[in-house]
Length: 67
Image (cartoon, rainbow, N blue to C red):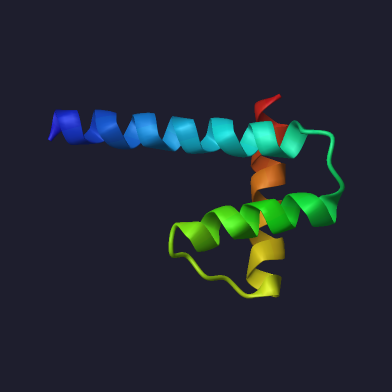
């Protein structure tokens, strides 16, 4: 059980790091959203435009809180 928690913590940290890197990259918002959407689509996760925008906004707020 402890190993599983460690794995989830590592994967969660990696995901937050990847998202932070994407959010701080000097790209237009529409390009960033398209890039995130493509990454999710490649992983089999399909979101509608509104859901994608909410996800990006939520991640951006989380990253701002980390600064």
